[in-house]
Image 1 (cartoon, rainbow, N blue to C red):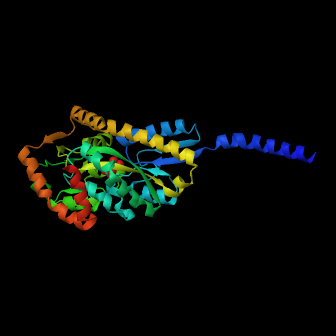
Image 2 (image 1 turned 135 degrees about the vertical axis):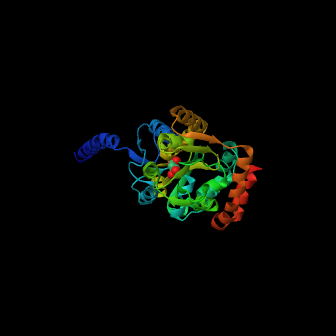
Image 3 (image 1 turned 90 degrees about the vertical axis):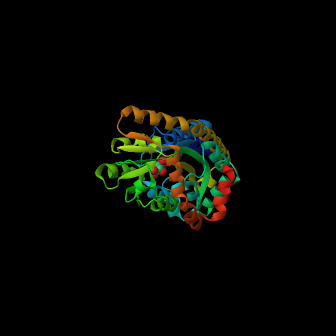
Length: 329
Ligand code: LMR
């Protein structure tokens, strides 16, 4: 009969749709620029594990570390175009997108420790900043710590005068640019993937980064000195393509949010240890001399960098800087 053949057809259609649907999970390409053995590298792997588990395999996360897909600036363009779905760029890399506010995180000696930073990233200020991304077709999901930055070079960096005319690789942040200009240094924006070679060949003399990034990129093998300044912070904003995210079935989005929350907790409980371990490895390698500053030398650096605040006010707004400083009190 007609009804029977319709029923037969739909059973055949279902039988066909079943395995086909199982074979085509939703793919999230997650691109980043650091090594796998770093806070961000490990947290992205943790997110993959949890996302695939909580969605029962309906979502597959492909993590591409070490700039294998895209470099610093290209990855943000790729996200907006939908060529990748998820990234975790540092706060210092949103300027080229037209969002300057995240550069407030780059202010030297802004927040004294990770505990204070969490007051920003887990509080209303952090949420307000994430909302700014909406207008760029991006949804901000979470903040992940890396840690505090150190200064490295082929000369000893002890006093502010030591920075004069030294060429430093920097991330694209204008606040970081102002920081080095204030010291009389020569900052040069460069993608993270190019830093090792630029240091090795002398295109730049120095750079600033966390212990984990310095060690996993082997920068310590091409830098004679690293000064333990802890002068600034590197942390990440985990972002997704907004349209991709909004179009997901609600139950799947909820499962992914749960996975992200847990991956964030995982990241933020182990980032400090990653950096401590990297410092220990650098010491063990004996490749760079590690310089500790005395209280007076530290005070001199803080004083020399103070003018950056005024410069940054023109970039991110004094009101926003005040909101950050309020959290440090
Ligand atoms: C850098 O470019 O130095 C860092 O932002 C790299 C990273 O993602 O930690």
